[in-house]
Image: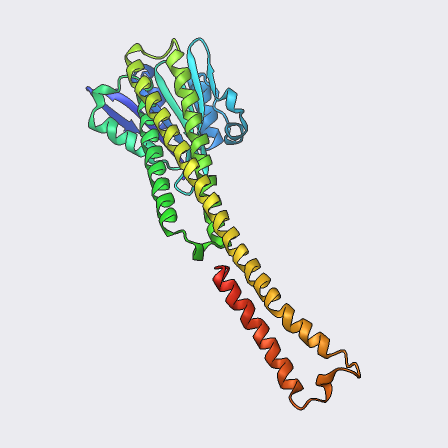
Length: 314
């Protein structure tokens, strides 16, 4: 669904309009934030001409190099970042800051944007410029990332508590692998934010009053990265535990076949001897020869089993 939201200052409050024509008839200095959600190319071109900016296409935002996600000119900042959806799909978002106005370009509804709008409505005086809105969006996004990391930790804990030698199967290994991939995506997403926020702290365009909040934001991001590193270690440990259980099961199977082979070696030898059919074998014409050979086989098996049990091999 295509949606344009124009946030502007009026009567000591922040109001919202959805009309591009309203943008053209209102002094540009009144505007705070222009949010473009899945808008048509025609609207983007119209805004580019009016605001004298360049709005990247979604394909460009996806393909842009990690090292080029932050760009700064004499009067503007451009930050491209991926926001993770609840299903762990990446949604590219472009932030353009010029003349104290924030322009955001995205293709999906994002929780961090809805929550930021609530914050702006609740306390409009703390958002005098688009830079303040931008920092608020990143703060909200990091809070959501923290919730995702916490949910991931709970999943890992649940998996860790349920893992046992009886559950060591392919499905469990795939579950560990999926959690590793999700954790890796979370890490990449947060490192993406870390680079952008660190660059913002060095920018001459960023208001000095925001430096304290940005510093705290960097600390929060570093804390999340430490937590994710711990989750990686736990998943590695679970994987090693799983492989250990698999080895135990394999060893049990090998041990069982080895014992069976050893148990049946003497009876096989006895049966082979009596199957030679030499004429001078006394048991061939003995009335109890057959019973004797069977009994000898059973006796050999019993002796081996008793010996194995005494050695605690069984």
